[in-house]
Length: 178
Ligand SMILES: [Zn+2]
Ligand SMILES: [Zn+2]
Image (tube, rainbow, N blue to C red; front, side):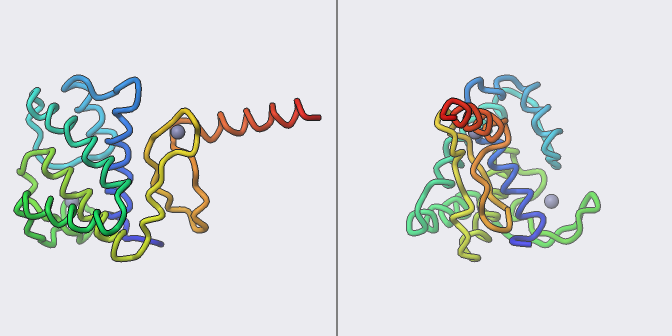
């Protein structure tokens, strides 16, 4: 295992959130957000109002940037977000998840919790020297984020079918060459 389970979950959730912005945007209404939160298993309070949706939508480009920064820029940016959020790490256990760290309370605004969870997970990635696991989909027409948790760091495509599409294309190219 590369990271702790909660870190892997948080990295996946961060990538999934950023990828909702890919055309067509799947996070356009409070109902969209509710569905996303349920699918991704987000705990804690939700207001369900347009302001919450706006804050979460505004977080997406910021998280995308974190995924792409070089270490020297990423580290101070992560620290800055923790200061901004007045993060205070606490060991917690809820919903049968086992001990893990929350750096902001469960009743903090959703977008803040999403930002800090992503940052805490990225801190683990930096500490482990594993930033090369933060990737973007290798398909020409896709810029989705990918978290590569594979043993041999071989993951290249996002989860929205790009790998299959590329396989089909490669197969056709081979057929044509024959
Ligand atoms: Zn938790
Ligand atoms: Zn893709």
